[in-house]
Amino acid sequence: MAAPYELKWGILATGGIAKLFVKDLLLDPSTRDVTDVKHKVVAIGSSSSKASAEQFIEFVEADKNTTRAYGSYAEVLQDPDVQIVYVASPQSHHYDNVLEALRAGKHVCCEKPFTINAKQTAHLIRLARERKLFLMEAVWTRFFPITREIVRLLHTERVLGPIQRVWGDFSRLFDPSPEHRLFKPELGGGALLDLGVYPITWNFIALYEQNGRKGPSEVRGTILKARGYDVDEYTSVSMVWDNGESQAVGTASCSLSVQTPRAYCVAIQGEKGDLLVEWPPYRPETYILQLKGKEPVKKTFPVPGQGLFWEADACARALRDGKLEADEYTLEESLAVMEVLDRARETAGYAFPGKLEKVYSE
Ligand SMILES: NC(=O)C1=CN([C@@H]2O[C@H](COP(=O)(O)OP(=O)(O)OC[C@H]3O[C@@H](n4cnc5c(N)ncnc54)[C@H](OP(=O)(O)O)[C@@H]3O)[C@@H](O)[C@H]2O)C=CC1
Ligand SMILES: O=C1OC[C@@H](O)[C@H](O)[C@H]1O
Image (cartoon, rainbow, N blue to C red):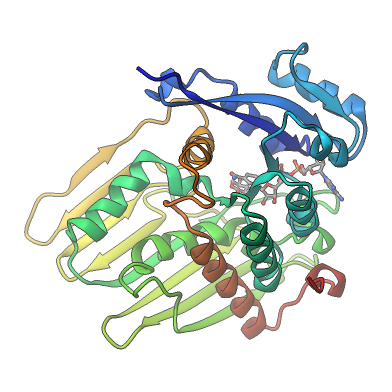
């Protein structure tokens, strides 16, 4: 058997998701039945201080002898050992951080949402293609075995027949705090870009393929700011998916002020029945297939860890195979998702502080 392909990672930021991601990178891949790729974390960068990167290494229990701690992102980008960079800063910083990484010649896996707006994403895609570097938006849900199975059922087996309607919600009650990034407009906070990305992702999983790999033809957003913070708090996005050959409607909602009912958080409805996904929409384990006239079938796919390793494995396989994007989630689809987020904000009359929306000339 061939030796597994090893991918060497540099990490930008030392916050919550970076900790979970690196812990997953450090797991032995055989615990998830993976033997063809493996990961090595070689550098951690903190924009705050070297001490913060050192504490991170301690916290995730990485090897102190082989993992370098840096007090800036630039040093990670200059480290010749780093092949790919994981960007885990707040979304307000993704555009700048990814641009710098690509300009330094590094492949990039960037946390969701890719950027603040679609023009920024389009710029990153152009640059990555120009420099022949791998680029991916880290929408981890896309890479779960359960998601691959749902994609197969919907689009290869076409168990639901033509899909007519999709509904998804991700709502979670957060205590409002001026200190939390979700309540800070200057960090791209609010429900839509943080939580809404997931029900929109489920709409894309169900409808993008059927719509000829194009985003929705109409998008409308409604937004309510309720607790005095200048970020979207209750948000709904309605989509029409009409390409002249197939028609469907989709809804994606999210909130920082109520919880999604726990029974299910995604419903995909077709002519032959429904497929429901149980909570949570970002880390799914169970679906229920209810075909018309048949008993419901419930299937669970336990996640052996946090589940962030599957997107990392996809990066490793793509690079091993000389690909510059992941088959499971292409850059064109990421861009189409960003266009939905833009359109939802535009139609709802909701904007971020002007400087977040910047787009550099090439
Ligand atoms: N896939 C998933 O399930 C999840 C994805 N996310 C996404 O990951 C990103 C980070 O989220 P999360 O880890 O929860 O955020 P945290 O607030 O926990 O951490 C963000 C980190 O970014 C760095 N940073 C750089 N500039 C700033 C700044 N101006 N203000 C605050 N932090 C800054 C800091 O690290 P340092 O000081 O070391 O540079 C900080 O620790 C977001 O884009 C979010 O949408 C978040 C949670 C889950
Ligand atoms: O991406 C995410 O998924 C899980 C949520 O709790 C978190 O706020 C969000 O950033």
